[in-house]
Length: 465
Image 1 (cartoon, rainbow, N blue to C red):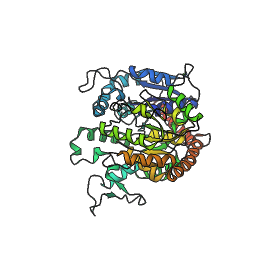
Image 2 (cartoon, rainbow, N blue to C red; image 1 turned 90 degrees about the horizontal axis):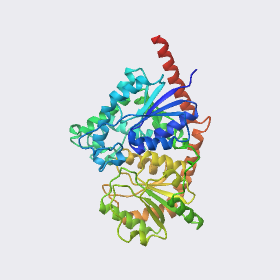
Image 3 (spheres, one colour; image 1 turned 180 degrees about the vertical axis):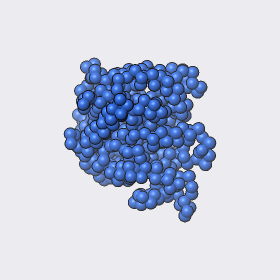
């Protein structure tokens, strides 16, 4: 039997692209041929990530030009001046369909494609050419299952019978949720009049008609929710992660130790513990909130490495000087996994994007969750309540005061709850590594998925002939 040929097409955002790249590494290690589509401006990042191998093919597909509301030359969400522009950006990708289909015509036999959940239009092209489509959302089973269950029970759009703010999902009675734990797109009274609602609904429908969903998680972590999704909703969710563990261990030939890693080495040499602080590239933070975070970190007395995004205010004058003995602020793009794996990093203050959660678990680092949007509130809930691998910052309508942050940061790094979370994440982290080893649950699931789809495509070709 010939080696499978898989087409990968990530959404133009670092948080969506990185797990697809990790999937490419995983497939290449199994002897598959991989073709990856990207836009010209995103190609350097893709090429660098795949520089260790010549087995992957990279094909450029042009991003649409002259899109109203999108600055010229922007081909990635992390280049957008405002997060609010993401909808126009995502919707514009549908204009890529003619070029996408030209590429499909030119490629040798494709066993299956895995495309991003925001590229729902690729399903029509996949069906046109008889290619099974898998969906990559970057969400965990917990978030997928809970969102669907809440929607099926109309818990998000209708008030509770008892007038309570607490949402109880009959299928999971051991948890108590709040409306703010779910995506705000579906909670607004006039939601159906919002074009974002229509866009998300289209992607959900496309997903439901696809062959399956690849999930960056492992079965032992979320068996209850994976089983529920597969029995009640679908398409089938295949747990093949943590995908970050597929990253090559060798550094690039031109690797130079970044100054923040040198700083961590210095702190490790002193026997110090460090809190890593990062909220992703898409989070917008008001100046008032930014000042509260600065003050909370300063007052806490803990050592910290804070990676600030592009959509943040200027640091308060004198802040870096006041904390220079125990804190460093980084404005460049960083290899987050390299930081989390450093011996002295003992906590992660995070927005709880699922990639970050998985990377922290695999590095056995407990998490302090401060979610901002999308699936992040449910991820933070899972971190603190379901997995118990971290704590959650107390907030009022998402706003965090410095006093509360100071307290919970100290608890994570020095307190009893932090110690318990650290012990728990060590156990789950070990299980994550075991899942991807030969014979592990994720290893077996990927084999089953590839073999099943390879057989399906061979049978379809035989029928056509």
